[in-house]
Image (tube, rainbow, N blue to C red; front, side, top):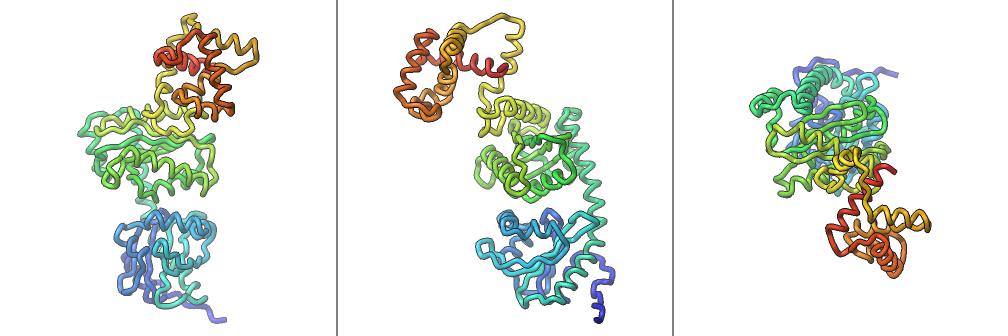
Length: 412
């Protein structure tokens, strides 16, 4: 069998040149992307394209809705597993026509992708072999790009740690640091954290970076790893909704969902520190994110659906109150009475009271949560009133005993 000649054995000055040459050889539009689906080059001399490719060229990255769809239909997982061409069927809802994709590998790592749009023809078997040769040629041109990228990452991480630890605090010095990295100073931002159970190894780090690099919900400014934590400086895209904090919260929910669906990472804790306008408060936002993580670990059930420091309410202050109580023999009379009653009668009046207050004193919602009839709950509340000698219509009495219950739970 005659060995196929390699039309890509020549040297190229630019990625655009090789994209055009691949397009000429295969007679179809070509795009070249990095591993995070940012556009590196595209062929220019073929007229036809589709909406997905047009959006990619205009935005310099593949639209997030297209990436999500390609994950769900198995295309991207297949590209990340081997170096064989993968056919992608037309997906009208995201403007994707038939195409073939191939991943570009350096040793055991994917460093990019080539996408060939089958607008003029369907690629035959010999075309797919040519696409593999093209991927090898593009790899050699991407290697210097990878080296530059790693150097930039090292510089940005060093700068980020200085911000997180408060080693630089002057506004002008911080602004200069952003400009040196080619990053605009954010008008608003927050520190976002992902904590895993175990140390973040290289594979997991790449998965986390992939999610952050491909998101278009918020702007990711800086990232770093600290053992089992990924720390992110994120800025909301306020022009989208006018609700920047809500944008960040939605982004966190999206990341958590994708971690579970794509990588089976379900034991993660995600939290956001405070949102600030002055760039000198990165250290404070980081400390708040750490506090939120700590609270979510300690009160996992109660704070399951809370993601930000500002949402934690009284949980922000429990450590301070607990520390204050350490050197005192204070005992809350009402709570002590309820605890004694529960112990003697094997009842659960303390839990009932806690759930009732958490449900904003709504007996119908609390009864459902406790899985009891409303009449049963009303009876228990009357017993609580009598035994604890408190007025559950008095917000101060109610809130005080609620705090005491939370402090008690910290030591159970």
